Length: 172
Image (cartoon, rainbow, N blue to C red; front, side, top):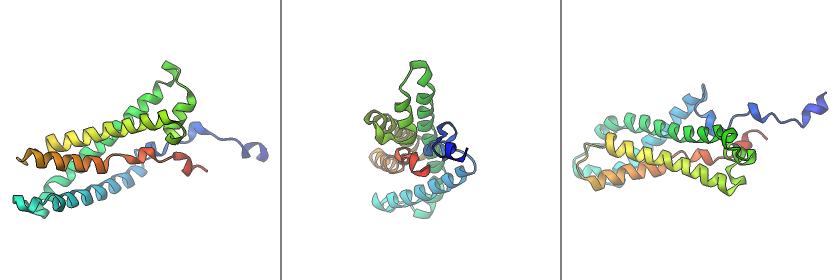
């Protein structure tokens, strides 16, 4: 019996790495990691775009915006993950190739189409990060060009690039 189980892989109980970041207790690690990354990017953008020259104080700017950047960023990541989940759900409806679905979940780099789909999902999250930051987080910044640069920079850097990490590295 031990020999028989040696070669059995139970893919239906193995979660994709991107999904694990939304499940307890790993969600706490994800939230803390996102907070740290968002903090570093927000501070870097403050200095990079010389917001102090426009009358902003780093401490006040940070305190006023970090929770919104963090919360909306996580919401945007979740939206991208929901799109991947919907694609997974469509497997039976459209009779999608199970290898394609497996590639999206466990190793996008096994299929060019899977890489494209995952990049589209990352871009969807990035769009929402940009939209939320431009429209709701930095809406008090009157200089629209500066607001655009700030929102775009945060979106490009903090998009959920982890969707591309092959889950199979965790399960070898």
